[in-house]
Amino acid sequence: MIPTIVIASATFVLITLSILFFPNIKIGKIKIGTYWVIALIGAIILLAFSLAPIKDVGKQLVSSSSINPLKILVLFFSMTLISIFLDEMGLFRHLANLASKKAKGNQYALFLILFGLISILTIFTSNDIVILTFTPFICFFCKNSKINPIPYLVMEFAAANTWSLMFVIGNPTNIYLATSFGIDFISYVKVMAVPTLFAGITELGILLLLFHKKLKLQISISEEETKIENMPLLFIGIAHLAICLVFLIISSYINFEMWLISLIAAGSLLLFSIGFGLYSKENWKYLTGSLKRLPYQLIPFFISMFVIVVAFNYQGISSQIAQFFGNSHSIWIYGYTSFIASNLINNIPMSILYSNICNNYQAVYASIVGSNIGAFLTPIGALAGIMFTSLVNKCEVKFTFLDFIKYGTIISLPVITVTLLTLNLFI
Image (cartoon, rainbow, N blue to C red):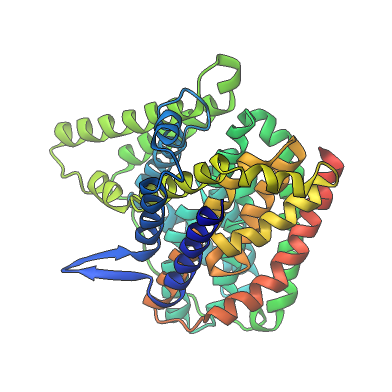
């Protein structure tokens, strides 16, 4: 047991240090994220010393269980591909530009419109996609309009990691924790809709209080025309997302697993894109651009974290944590500990670990809350935070680690408390 704890702890500490001080390594022209390399090394060491039996890992990777990590990855990557495809078509940027024009120079109006847009897109796509798309746009727009980008960046990151609570597909942590207890799409929404709404309202109130002085200043909107070059293909993409969401909603009634529905939708979109390219004799830049932007580094990271949790289960560590937490006050214990644990070991490994220690539905939903809202306490809380800080640095916006924690603390602590309180009333 002790060697497993030592190796896992060292892995988590090194991942944290890598995110803070050396997030990437370059091999020639290829840039590789160090976080997943460290995780992979930790998993290999555990397997090499039989602290995580290879047979156990192999059985779970090919099992028909809903928490098979490969099924989770298929679901996440399929939905991500559809969302990125819409972004490649220019849909998100077009909507963002329409929002800026509607504001007519009023920062309050712009702030509220963007908050609403980001929230809606997050609900129907995912938090990672919205952050990847809107962060560069916000930096570029604010630079051109000569306004402070910090209120908009903080709002974007907080909103994306709050409204991702609404649907099970909003975050890979939702998917893993919900499927570990056999929670279907409809059952999930019935429980999480009201807590998410209260979380969003609380968050918006805090953001407006926090930035009201900066938002009083008028701005001159720089007119930037955006054009959708291929409307038929865009409609095909939107139709695939809409149909996929409908089937995900009714998946439990038609006895069809969510990962298979999303895979069929993504596969169909690929075939339609290829066919459209052949028919119209156009290049396939939208399709190739989407495939290039998929977060492939998540695969080794996710599998490596899964191996570490298998080691925890095999050594009896998970069961001891579950006993320590007990069965009473599950919402508060699991909600706050998952919130903190996300910022110690990242929310993906936290979710994989908690899927094995949660002993009731209250604990599962509370852990889902902690995994999402914990993402905007520190940049370590989620992969979204790593991507966000990298994009902000590339755009040459000064937003330090301490700035992130300062705003994250002010917003996340009251939001998670309100969310857990609401969850306690509605579950």
